[in-house]
Image 1 (spheres, rainbow, N blue to C red):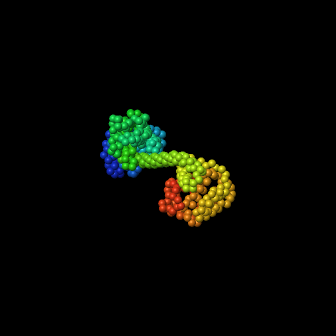
Image 2 (image 1 turned 90 degrees about the vertical axis):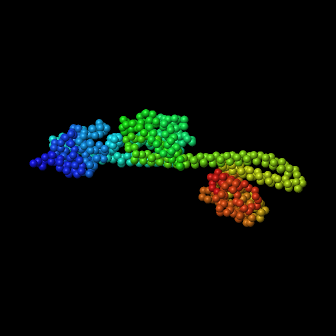
Length: 553
């Protein structure tokens, strides 16, 4: 009969209590492992195994001088494809890639000091499924003491945090990319910032090259991160017969991602090494097309971290990154196109202004030459019929000269060449004097002209010549379109400014025409007027001259 404290009975009871996983443990030939047969297992080992098997938390026990491996059902995903082969084997045989550094130092610290050790978010490059993986763990190491007070083994309570760490880091990268590229005005600026951000995350993106469309069939290197002299290391010109250039050209043509050899971009430099494990080469690069407004405007080439599964979440993340870069590029291209259009319109406007100024000068010279002989002929002519004809010609020439001068003034104003020569002026008095010039013309037309210009509290800075043009244009318009009643000119103080108001009882302006009141050459169709001369520039000139004084109309 066996005693209740017989180790064989204790181990068998532990296996029986462990359910399906306990049955698996019971079937292992422990005698062929460093742990030896269960009958030889000391009590602390059996007790710790019982604790592990009854816990739903991930736990592992490393026993003896070789740290033979035991673990519970919850830890099997962490062991991966090495389960159940790993049970009972020395840790350095199970995971030799992390034994030398840092795991052995953790185990020896705990057994040597018999103190617990907490290691949060530890990075381990482990082979669990036939390839090296970049993993993160929160681990608490606890010594398991024997009866003599020495440490017989190490209990590890661990939680794999790989998904959370990678997810948070990738989210930060995407967020930073979106935030820092928002509102950038040019594709080149977008490329530069994307490369800067990517350079801060070498474990996610070992290297990056960004190529942008420069002309049909051509892509120019725009920015890079983690590459020695790139992106100049790869030419995308049609003359480049390299495999990388051909594959990238295919990416652009197909609009679909493609895998390329990393050496085509790294040139065999250290850029082809993993950031956290330099011994692991970066062998592949992923070329992702950047779709903007229905066409490929560039290619994003990223080095593929060899320690992440080639498909799944990592690949999805890289595609989301490419979409974010494409979105920023689309916005920058739209901004650049708007800028080009604005510059083209401004250039066209400058050309029109120059044209108007030149034409005005060309018109004014022959008019001046024409008016001189006309006025001389008028002075010498005594015959009434001939004098009447000469006066008619003079009036036509003077009217045309006035319109040419107005056109020249507008051209100067829009070219920014109008600079008022300001001096303190009695605005009320000057306005009343200018309005008085029109009184006889209004009376001859059977109209009234009321002038209400009481003195202002202080002089107003004014260019006298410009103010004269403003008053004459407004009162000329009022006379031209008024047939009964008359006009009223009023000057009044408005806070620290002065307000001029010209009112008439004329034909008025239709409501739908008001938004176009200050458009060049615009005239209200069918409007009744005393004469038909005019170029539609009078109110444009008024607006320009008022604004040159810092006022509004």
